[in-house]
Length: 420
Image (cartoon, rainbow, N blue to C red; front, side, top):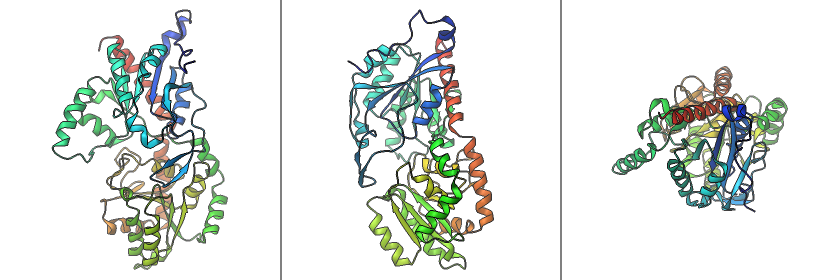
């Protein structure tokens, strides 16, 4: 039997009170993703909408090989409980690297069965998402677009002209857009969205899972630092992610080497959590420069909280990063942020705020990165910026994103019904 065969929108016998106030909101999702599951659970608990998530692939639920991390693994946190969902008939167990090639003809049948009042698509690059957009356009169902794009997007001339023409046409079929911060908002406005169509919805993290580590932070911090040979007086700078060229982890090593020439530089310690092609060269670079560092390798979601507990700041030196969700996780643990200006989470009302909770440096400028690290060698500065990180995170927590998404659903449905 089809996964969607018995999943029907309530018929006319459903009470008028419930159907008058609840919109049927269907999310077309590429696959189960650890950063979206908390949002779906919060939406499922909202009295304003009737949520159903349709997955186009089973990627992420089973063990698969991730080329970026260079290893096989599966996510250990719960990705699918707590909200109504189904998998398309042709949803395969493809790896996450096959997602861009998704093409699920059965998405039309699923939408026919669910009879949504509003549809949200997860990006626009896959053919499945464009199928869902076309289905909705034919039936005059409003569509919301969730994309993690940021502007500037690094697309040069003449490709930028072609992209703007193509997206301007696509954007005219979209009723509302979600941005994760200032640069996401700028992206949508650049490609044709109107101000009133853009809604803030941050990347969400598994707050209950991370809270368990945060609640025992002192003990976890002491335990891991002792295991790694770090002292409490050390300033531990964390890099968390794939050890690949795009994320420029070598810049962090070179910045730490520059710090060694200062009087307090010996207190700077690097902690790498993650794996990838560059691990061997990074270990060699650390040895060459005499930098104190530890490499933890890949950590799954069930143990990564203790890594944040052991750190004093997080560094993300990427040359291209649409957002940088590890920054949200770090902010949850009261960590100051050091980020390149190519990271999408940077902005005056975004998660990483220059001069507030974040030190922002020009991408590739090692001396500027070292200057940001040097400032954070001061425990008082770290504490102040860390408090601000947590305060800013609370403005962008799961509940905020869910509330804004419900508002967007109601807005676009109302505008559609009123012919606006």
